[in-house]
Amino acid sequence: MPPTRRSTSSQSMRRTSTSTQSIAHADPDPGPENPLNLEHPKEPNLTLSDFMDPRAQRTEESKPYWRHLAAQLLAARNSFAARNPAADNPRCSALDRAAVLAVYNEALRRVEHMCKRDVQALDEEVTKKVETILDLRCAEVEDAVFYVDSAFLRPLEPQYAQPRLDYYDRGKGEGSDGYGRAAWMRLREWRGEGWPRVVPVRAVEREKRERERRRRLRREVDEDLEGLERVVAGEWGEEVDADPERPWR
Image (cartoon, rainbow, N blue to C red; front, side):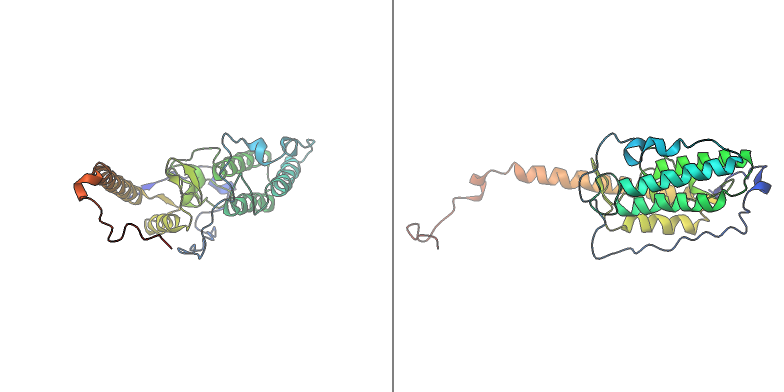
């Protein structure tokens, strides 16, 4: 089945051309010495207000519109950076923090002299990408945040697509890609099919099959372990001690 191409917006003239846009995605290290886990278990039921001061996104409106958005982006960026340290953070990993700051920094570079329509579109794009990184929004493989068509900013890395590949265990066996190996494999597979300009349909299907294979193997191993647990000690015979009176030293 050929890769599904995303339709290009009719307004692409006002946005960066996909043929000239630089996609700076360096290959991640597939095996760092230490896992990139959170210092604490991630707090449940988080909202955007937990990551930054809500007042940071309500700056005094001014014209031109791009100046107003620039002030909002800067305030939100500074609030997020101050509230979420790179280390010892129970809300997001250091890599997710860096990804959020990168979105804000790029948006601040792009917003200057934008028309009102583009300002509104950029504001929406920033919000979606930040919420996706922080696990406040679910983004499927086809979500626009992962592609360059009709976008002002660089696409998010494939690791944020459902099912997410986090650097920490989110519970119930989700995430827990502490060394980034699964994220690196997904990035390599997606790139091989033309991402970020096309939806990597075949790569997604291969990953689904591999996940199902691993689930099946885990079930088989669990069944084998359950069988061993049912073995009683008597079936192995009585334990013999050559010198039962000898004290242990």
